Image (cartoon, rainbow, N blue to C red; front, side):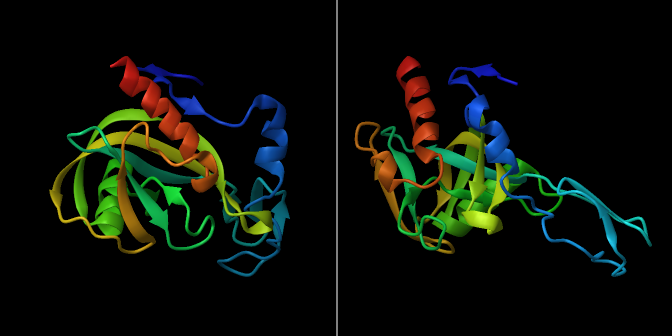
Length: 197
């Protein structure tokens, strides 16, 4: 489950000791009793449900995201300040959820354009981080894919889910308590790969 790149190991999740609690504390299908297609009763558990009437099947799954560590010619990293919860006001890396059927690199380009006004070229795959989007019973599991990227066009402007854009040098990055989700870990892996290059 671990892959090597110039950035080191590229699959990241919580330590195995917390994996059961982490993955199972909330189910995407929790509370589902009726089929969304025919309103028939559902059988199964929080991982898989099947309709008795029409045989529709629903699986609980992690929601994929595509995000980027965008650097400029001076090797500064672009961070965005989140507009909404979870983690409103904290620094994040630009990116977001894939649309159904969307290729991750297309989602990466779309999300960066929507949030920052910039057109980017994805470069190296940085890694995968597992997380949850939000807290409590409403939190969904996420599968977060990260690439390095460079700007190839556009005009920088905070938009959509972002209130501010800022470039940070590798030694100027905000402390982890000012960042959202697992961003401090992603930046740490990027920094190690950057220093080794």
